[in-house]
Image 1 (cartoon, rainbow, N blue to C red):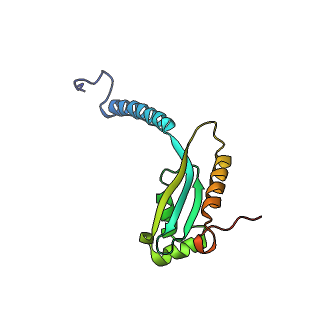
Image 2 (cartoon, rainbow, N blue to C red; image 1 turned 60 degrees about the vertical axis):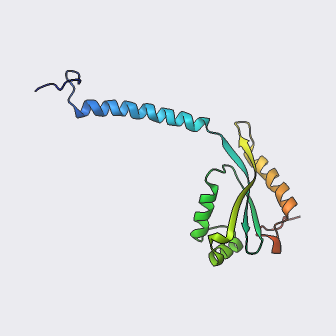
Image 3 (cartoon, one colour; image 1 turned 120 degrees about the horizontal axis):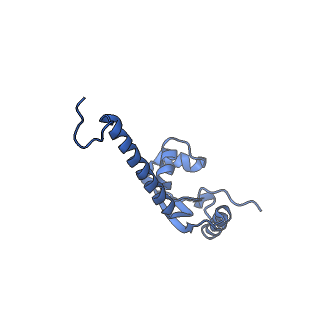
Length: 142
């Protein structure tokens, strides 16, 4: 068997190259995992507004990245938990709604995400009162 130039003795082309690719894949994977860990995550409060009626929906999310994409997919599939919002979305279509992050906060290891989000949501619900004709949220129980 003739040895190809640049490939060490005893290595047979594809298997040698696959091993090299595998090592590069592992290194690349490590780099990507490290980058992911270093990415900042933001939690917060968002608002969906029906521009035709002015009604709003206020909610929170522990990771706002791609939240609007997820919400639109749920609404397009008829699977959103808020039935009034879902009904209006189905009748009026996506173009009748806007999405806005109204408060965000960086998540750290020390963050009590659930507690922080409850406090943030409570403040915005109190401020905007998105109940009845004004919104899609259910009024708080006293």
